Amino acid sequence: MRGQDMYARAELVVDREEVSRLLSLILASNPGANSFIRIKKHPDGSLNAEDLQNAIDYGFNIVRWHLVEE
Image 1 (cartoon, rainbow, N blue to C red):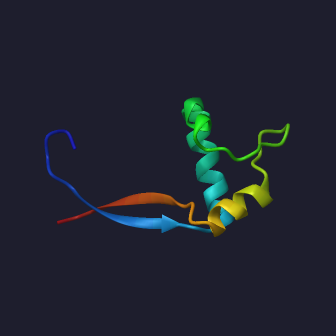
Image 2 (tube, rainbow, N blue to C red; image 1 turned 180 degrees about the vertical axis):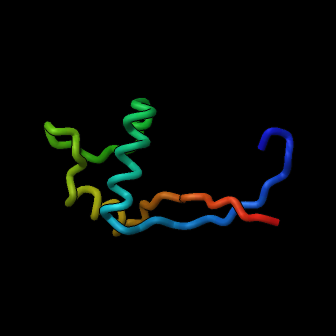
């Protein structure tokens, strides 16, 4: 990062509510991601809970990275 090596620890996020929150942030900041993340949305913009849970059950999750102090 900025020319320096950094260490990070990966966390797999599988909690449906947290995946929904993070995925909504991803899709809001990068609408193109919707072309390969095919989870239905409700008219209010929220993700369909059944589709999201089905995706999680089949292995979909989000990797959240935490920087580690050396």
